[in-house]
Image 1 (spheres, rainbow, N blue to C red):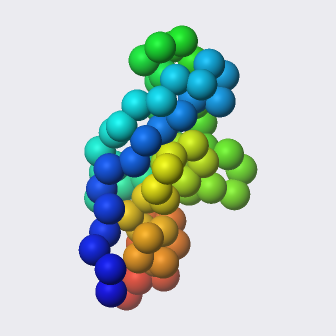
Image 2 (cartoon, rainbow, N blue to C red):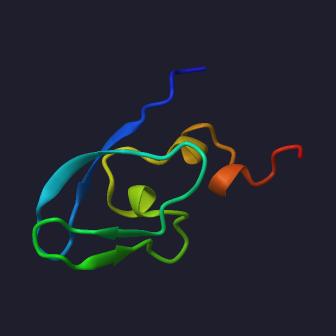
Length: 75
């Protein structure tokens, strides 16, 4: 299996500002405030987090194809 990428560039769909961020590995991030225009981004319907919606790399859970926040994992 390929290594999990923890850095993603989030691009604001409102102003186009892009910033590299470190993704959490233990939870999905549903909201993100653009540091340039201050708009609060929300994950798009069907996406588990803002990284899956606006990032250059999908979140760690999706990279591992586990689904959102590890759903479907044995608990």
